[in-house]
Amino acid sequence: MTHQEHLLPLLVVEDDAAIRELLEEELQDAGYATLGVPSAEEAIALLSHTTVSLVITDVRLPGMTGIQLLQQLRQAGSELGIIVITAFGTIDQAVEALKLGADDFLTKPLDLDAIRDAVFRVLERQRLAVSHDADISHFHGIVGKSQVMQALFHDASRLAKSDAPILILGESGTGKELLARAIHQESPRNDQPFVPVNCASIPADLMESEFFGHVKGAFTGANEARKGLFQSAQGGSLFLDEIGEMPINLQAKLLRALQEKTVRPVGGEREEPVDVRIIAATHRNLDKEIEQGNFRSDLFYRLETFSLRIPPLRERGTDIEHLVFALIDKHAEAQGKQIEQIEPEALNNLLNYAYPGNVRELENAIMRGVTLSEDGSLNHKDLPERLREQSTVETGTPLVPAVSGELLASGQLPAPPPIRWPSLEEVEKRYINKVLEATGGNKRRTAEVLGIARRTLYRRLEDNDE
Image (tube, rainbow, N blue to C red; front, side):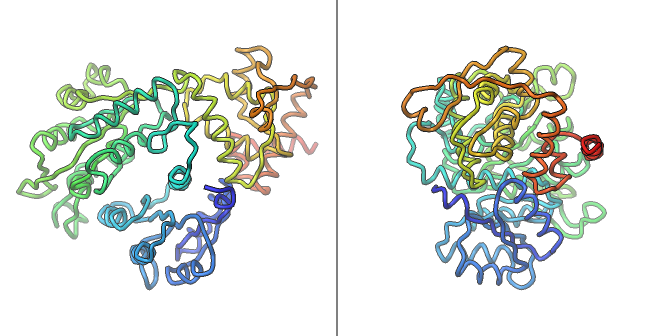
């Protein structure tokens, strides 16, 4: 994907003006340009003369629905990235959207972090689809040249061809959902739905209905029959993220569904056949959960036969170097910036931090650094404080000199410049002012970037004014 394509705006199609404004504000805070319209008809009119990189559309719109907009764009041959927003529980619409060519779907009430993640995933898949860079190996969008990652890609590709359940193990932030999607794409089911669900996000009293559906009148408010996640994933893959959070009574019903390949909707009298491939994931130690009575051993053994472990970033060797430069390039392009130099301490911080949050934490750190960078340079003071503190304590002094694109290509590295240490008050004041400037004076967003409460930000601003 070219630099110009990264600068193309995202189109938000939402008739609720407040929600549309919220979506645009969050996406702009993440570095994207946006356009917004209240109807599918206006979206089509705008797209006739304006080029965008991605469309985010609600299903319920006045006049033409979001599903009809999706269908019309795909029938016209459009390869635009399209994300569909549906009301919570309307899984049928989400599955229909995926079958018609949507790249992803989100449910209301909206999770703003999930929106940014979904936009990133879709744009990244588009970028990788047209990329001819063979220097960095990737597996359906997962970057990894290290031996452990190449072995993981190999094993995942082999297991994808079977129909057995797969259990993905790994710390938070390692990319378990990305691997699940890659397995689905490698499998014979890749033309059927991939339905992800976070077991920790569904209220316990709604879980059985969400998974297996319900018949009309099954409980108060069940005014009509509804399919569950199993029926919606028919023929495809059902990804159960954080399966360690599933209540023990539902685990028994999940095991039965795996063994019998049938489910019984809540309030129903008959079993319904289902053909679904289960991919589960957890960051928990399920052996300990079994000992504590929180997880069924028979379900664990059923899943654990084919398990894959995603290594934490600290075990991936030189992958971190490739990820650092790839992510800097990606976020610089997304924000319309050119990062031509990395300050010695910044590169030292990025390469030597332990990353308990793994790739997700690395990406967040780089996104913040690029957002706050000035004059084409990524500086250590623009990175999160925890990176600066840990790297300084562990390494003492910077290990690597400033690096520019040309010098990286030539292999010649300059000596690091002398460092003048400002006072702590000066650093804090400059840092807060820079974040405020980068967020356009948005104090809510500034507090989020700084990782402090908004009232703490106001207090520090008052102190700086004295």
